[in-house]
Length: 421
Image 1 (cartoon, helix red, strand yellow):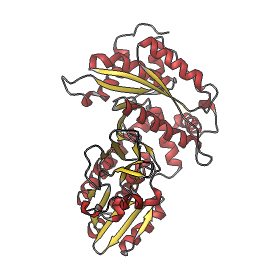
Image 2 (cartoon, rainbow, N blue to C red):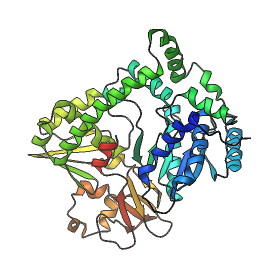
Image 3 (cartoon, rainbow, N blue to C red):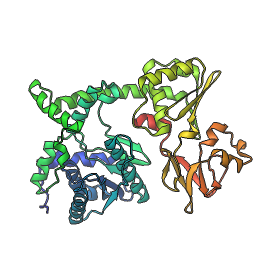
Image 4 (cartoon, helix red, strand yellow):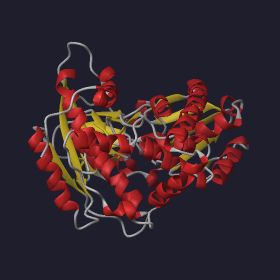
């Protein structure tokens, strides 16, 4: 149950923070902007939901809520139901998405996080929602800083979480990064809103819980959430300068049908850090990874390109020919089939009629397009282009052969990816 919202200075800063997060996304006089908030039922996301509910209508937004039930804890279904009930009381449309489960191998928590983002992105796009808000706070920033510090992270790992970025055709925002967990719980208490405490928050098996307790132990030294937030902000400004230099260097890169082309001298005249960033971002843009390859692997890649040799890293192929380097997806690394309309291979959105599937054009597809060379694409690029299939019958390959019914677009250009990552 909730009480009427409290008004006054106590809530003003929080309300302003969430209102500002979407201010630039909606043009004056435009139709209401559909936005969504991811809600687990915990204090942070519940506070974000309540705050967005208060500012959405006056700001010209239509608010939706979504919960992902990973099925990893027996309480998860009941917690999702509780969130649904709270949303119903507010009059906010809500849906619960369910994860099919983890792979047999790999990091369970990382798989769960990736699945959550993918499920929410697919859900949002299917409903015409282009913005999703997440409830991360200044405490999350500070804890992540300590975790990354323990891993000897560089600038990117210590510069904090992004306040906004675009991925899988959705704009993601974190309106509460400047707010503490304590401030949000105080807000909920003032407004008579209850929340769910996740028992895993007290489980020392999780790195984040250990980081939280380490942060408490560091308080007598003056290492607090506020102090770390200030340091993170300073590092983020330095990161912005490096990103700007990287984007400027990327001006020499030509993007064609998802492949990249650049001169070798343009790459190797860059400072080492800018060159490293260009190479790792090329790989991440193509393979969808949240993390760059290991430093030793990147150094080996640089040496191969410097020596005019081909190389493959992270499912991405680097072809070195005389004065030019071409970067494309490695055919054997591309994603398997997905239903038409879903994001394929981490970055392609294919639209069109019917219930077909999207997968790589491949050699079989090229055989069905005898005039594919008229597209001007190399064979490497054409093989990994998205294509629409009905069984073994090729319906369309929009990037290789003109087609009125189907389109294939990148969810983000390489330049936009550089800026947002």
